[in-house]
Length: 254
Image (cartoon, rainbow, N blue to C red; front, side):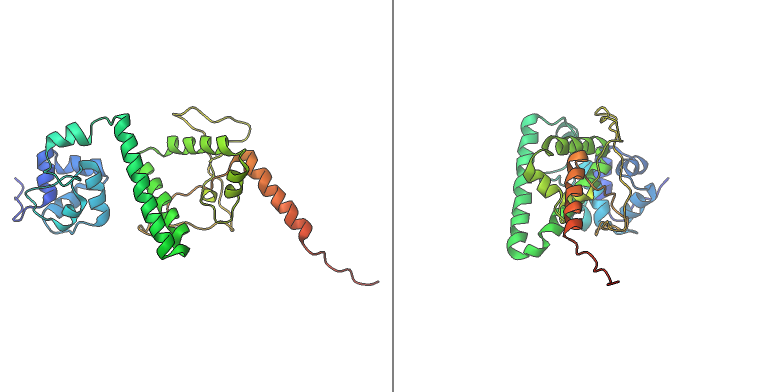
């Protein structure tokens, strides 16, 4: 019979409220059972990444997990008492269109405030901040197993807007975020159905920037995005113009 922890941890309280074993919780959040056990026994300090995973799955306040504040009374992300009923009936319930629209609007507000603040306080870091947003979105899409469909929708968006001159200009800009992706179907083939998109990563070249997630030691998966023929033709035109403007070598007199 396992020895009870001498000091309660909010993680253990949350797990018991949900009726989960250490093995079941570990599997749900992508951790080892030993990690959960050591955190509950206070032999391992909870990291921000672990708190992020557990909060995302259970809905428990992330700061409370990190600080182990009031361990016998966990709070949810809305700072209300956490319960199994709230977890089932609210946090994991199917979201309505009105709810989704509200949260998308709120996310848009939060992102705009952060970018606007960065633009006024440190304008040279705006592109880096936007790249961090896309990195976070990419990690979330991978964690929730949404990346294939999300990338297909992104490819559709590129194809739909590739005829817009303003959009094409942004696509070919040297600092454009879209150059970090390459969502192009195989040559001569149409995109696959939504459930099985045909997305081929383009091989990296020595000129590509090596993107790496600053919050993690593992390299982020980044594909360079292109708008198929529309982007290719624009790039080719730029190469031709650059070649014409290059100075010709002087010929030596005979």
